[in-house]
Every structure is written in structure tokens, then in C-alpha cells.
Image 1: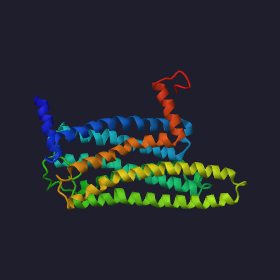
Image 2 (image 1 turned 180 degrees about the vertical axis):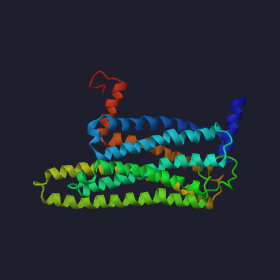
Image 3 (image 1 turned 135 degrees about the horizontal axis):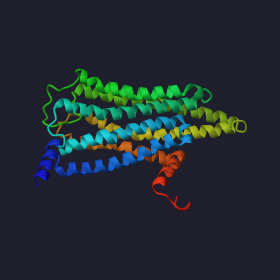
Image 4 (image 1 turned 90 degrees about the horizontal axis):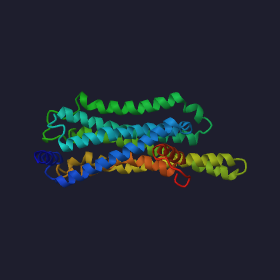
Length: 321
């Protein structure tokens, strides 16, 4: 009973006086479901690309596998930190420890945004310069883009440790992973970690569909000669649309968290408590949605998932499969 009371007190302290324990427990249950969904789905993505050579032949799939690793970091970094703070497992943490926890979670989201920009760039090259694409998107360049996606996110997340923080004035009495940062940093982070990547994604996709429209016009004029080109363009566009759908969902789920990050200029931290928890859990859920999009849109990924799942749940007949 004492342990139950202590956990309840920790929950109420973490969620602030404006949020009831029932709300907190609901979010914790949601965290548990998300953890399973993110772990299973993204593990299938990574294993499909690593184990099956036909999956590795696509540069886009390699980028998506790296994105899946970033999504797995949400399951193994963001959600555990959120749960430990809510349950009071880590106790009365100092502002510095709270800041470290905050930056560990921000790396995952920054890496995801960077990868989506890289994938948009990859699709743009594949459609706009199909003849030069294989020579341009070499193995070395793919590795560099993946390395840059991770390293830029990590470097940006280290900025608060060089003085741009509010460690000396933080006085909420509990660890808030968002409001541990000063207002100026939070708004600047939203610009560089959200709006800049969104703008770049939008630019590449505007160029993709502009080029695709022009290529389709040319193909219609020479249908007989360019039948194979039409088929290849269709496959490239389908891949681009899949990634575009993933990006659209990412933007929709990222926007509420971006808005709440700077909303304390109008509302108090206590008034934002419920919306903050909702918006960031919505952002967490994006990491579980991505594998579903691959399975829904990509025959290759569906085939890879089935092969992997059959090793765990062997099926006897083709109908069972």
C-alpha cells in the first residue's frame, strides 16, 4: 500500500496539479502499447533490409532501415525516460539530469526528420535524373548521408550543454522534459528541427511531381518507344508517394508538439499539461505508424515481413500464409 501511495504521489507531481492520476495512468498504458508496436514493427523493417538481398538493392530501403533504427530509439530512449519520470523511478532528479534526459529524447525526433529529408532528396534524384542516379547515389554517398543525418541531430542536441539552458532558474519542482529549456531555445529548436526539414521535404516533393508530370507528358507522346520508361516511372512514383505519405503523417503528428513548445508565451505550464502529454505521445506514435505504412504500400516490405514472421509462426498451407 505504501508503494502504491508513493507511485500515486509521484504521478501527481510529475503531471502537475492540473492533471489527474487517471490521465497519467492512461498515458502510461499507451506508452506500453506503443513500445511493443514500435519495437516489433521497426525490428521487422531492419531485419527485412539486412537479411534479404532484394531489399538491400534499393537505396530508399537502406535509408528507411536507418530511419527504423531512429524509431527504435524512441522505444528504447524516449518511452522509458517518460515512464521512469512519471512513476518516480528516478527519484528527485537534478535539472542537469533532466536536461540530459530531454536531449536524449530530442535526438530521436531530429534523426527521424533528417532521414525523411534525405529520403525525399533520394526520390527526387531517382525521378529527375534516372540515368545519372546509380552513379550519383553510390554506397559511399549513402553512408555519408546516413552519418550526416545522425551526427547533425546529435550536434544540435548538444547545444544546450554549452550554456543555452535554464539550469540556474528552473523551479518547477519536477522534471519537465520540454520546459527544462528556455523559451528562446525551444522556439529556435522548433525552427531548425521541424520547420526547416518540413520546408526541404516540401521543396523536394514539389520538384518530384513537377518532373513526373513533365515525364508523363513526354511518355504519352511516345507511348510505343517509351513503354518501359513509363513502367519504371510508375514504380519510382509509387515509392515516392509512399514516402510522401509517411512524411505527411510525420508533419501532422509533429505539428502539435511544435506548437506547444512555444505556447507558454500565452498559457501557463500547468494549463498546457494535458495538451503537452497528448501532443508528444502523438509524436511517439509516429514511430509505430511507419512500419504499417511500409506494409500497406510496399509489396517488398510485405514479403519481407511475412518471411520473418513465418520463422516465428510457421504456417502449413499457402492459404495459412
